Image (tube, rainbow, N blue to C red; front, side, top):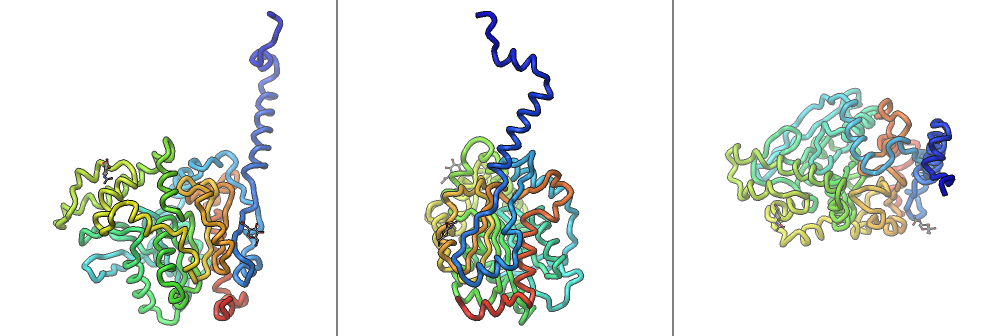
Length: 401
Ligand SMILES: *[C@@H]1O[C@H](CO)[C@@H](O)[C@H](O)[C@H]1NC(C)=O
Ligand SMILES: *[C@@H]1O[C@H](CO)[C@@H](O)[C@H](O)[C@H]1NC(C)=O
């Protein structure tokens, strides 16, 4: 039996370049077959769908995730790292909005080069994000290039300002967002408004739109949400899976703890025990130990039941474009309410095969093209069409489908 060759023997006699080329080819075929795909679009036939098909050409293109980094967690982390390295800080005009309960939020405006009456896009960042978060800067720059004014709504305690009261924010409470919208509208009567929420920001925005139903259409021309964890239950289950997901989870949980850590030193009479809360290892534990108590929910189940968006799509009346990746670690594909969107005439769900959570890194060398990333191209094509007169978007809105 000595003459039998093992696979290793064979490998040792064929040239290395040949082995490399074989592996490379197999990998490349896998990439082309499994990773590069046309996005799925779920939206009932009607005026909104037609509008998107006519005006948002990116929806007809394949999404080419970065060849050497298309695994979901890699997309999620690398996209964030690259964008935060490459995008310079944005110089906003800061406005502090005092809230009726004594709290405050920072509103960061970018209006450079925009007409004084040009439309405004309100941007809601993710869980612990603020106006200098990488994905926020990406979208803000895209909007600015279109001549749209932007205001980033930083949640309480974020964006470099401190808490004034023990209250923070949560996905099932839209009171602060309502106050911000009211303020922006009062300052800018007769100016068209739009909004974009990313991840947790998308949950808050979606919950607001669902709660306001038809009334929201008087306020917003159109809206967009990116990487929203539609089904909060399935999202938090998914993000508790070891090891990589759990690591992302812990990272976010640390951010949440940091947010409330300084409150005591500011002389705020806090009703919580920071030492207990600091032991939280996941967002769910943080929510159980903090959010639930602070906002008066019975338990985490009660909170997540009110925060979840997957069963509220039928209540949303504003034209809403949604972008999710099928491999988002925060939202498994089977939890995305594709069917509800497919039955809706004003909600369009765009799902790319890859992209992770707020990743959507494209191209061989994504480093050189952060501003032309998939996320911002979709955002730009959509909102430029919404606000371009020739597309007739506003007429489309008036004659409700
Ligand atoms: C949406 O519904 C249509 C039928 O109206 C169906 O052909 C299509 O496959 C559905 N798309 C998705 C993404 O579910
Ligand atoms: C609070 O957090 C701890 C970990 O620090 C966890 O063991 C506990 O279950 C949490 N409380 C609740 C009510 O879930």
